[in-house]
Length: 316
Image (cartoon, rainbow, N blue to C red; front, top):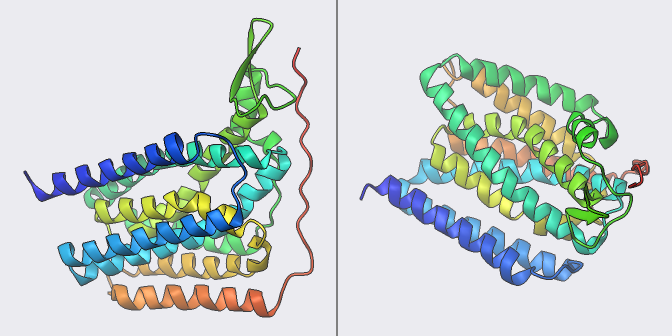
């Protein structure tokens, strides 16, 4: 049996087993996730990622291991910034804390499927058409510059997916337990919980447009790209609950991420002229992110963003 089939098959079994353990055993009953529980699981996921990284080093070698670590750090860092958006979405839709884990869990399943498709398409395009590297590089620089000017304004009611969905499917004005859909007087309604999930999925697609090209700038090995993404995403729920009350402290992280995306975009554009070792690229990424976190802690923000309350049409 070819080694690649063993690797992909074994990793697929691992992901399915962890999802089954999470959804079917550990979180079968809805409950509020404590900071202690979140920190414990965050530590477990980081440990698993590092153990897998060691396996990559033993199987593939130093360059592949560094590429995995760089991809994991990059995706994890982008996720921290994106967690703030999830926090605002939960606040906007007034999602009870006991149901937030379910939304993130199903959101992650959708994210894994979409990331797999996007990675397959991205790696194929780069292998078939070298000029796609320049397209991705220019897009990352554009995203980095845009991120510097971007302000956090969450208006899900203007989301095109939400507007299209609510045109064909009525939504209840209140939550019905942890149900995504409910039957009222013989008519099916979506609940605000499903509407939240819909926005989370759409938001992740937007996030992936930044993170996937950024990781492809480091390596085009689909196994390294996908596994680094999966480990970062699978630990996203625990990270959210661990940092939910502290996300506002990292207000300069956005600037660090903007600089990192711009750097990686430039690396892509100059890939035929300058070959930057993965170890040096990883050191630059870690250095920039570390400085942005340090600046956030030394110079705390005094203004907190505002989140508007939702207006959901009542069921009839």
